[in-house]
Figure 1 (cartoon, rainbow, N blue to C red):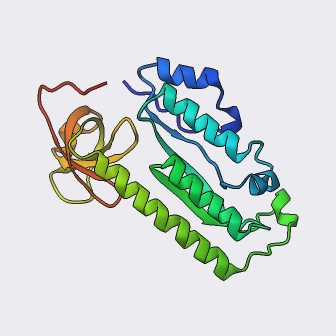
Figure 2 (figure 1 turned 135 degrees about the horizontal axis):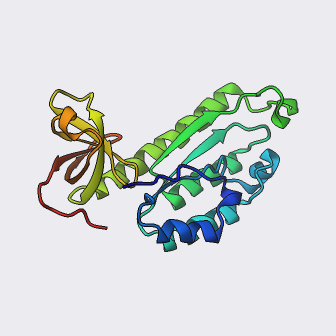
Length: 217
């Protein structure tokens, strides 16, 4: 019933791939698209193979083809040579793209990588402060996105019992958002359930399952 194309390196996200995601109805409307930084200068130092503008262009093209697609990403702060201006560009990119969530980290040298030979010249306290700013902004963006889901009908693939309480299940929407709702885990596990979203939580949604109502496509 569902195909989840998990992730793509931005430079490999071709128009043909976007068109396939739009055309194939079983492909879920979610993509993890690691950006790492919002600064072209830092991206070049990372040897990522794309610029800030190219990344934003691919996001725009993808959203035109797959309306409502949710995006998640990876970010590194404190890469060698990163300036305050570079960080501001990353924060601006977060505001522009509005990722559902991010995986964010402070830079630390890894053996056998090109960055391992670079001078780790961003102080630890600065890295920590930059990471805090990135995560605080993303928390606000995530909260807004989840609040916008309230009232909608969603197709939820039930994964199993919810940790929030007994007689509750948890699952994922087609856009990879976590949903908790009342239900018998043994009966509903692995099933697609149409659910009405009633409330946004910090990192998830609360819903109730509906009977006899078709999930909107």
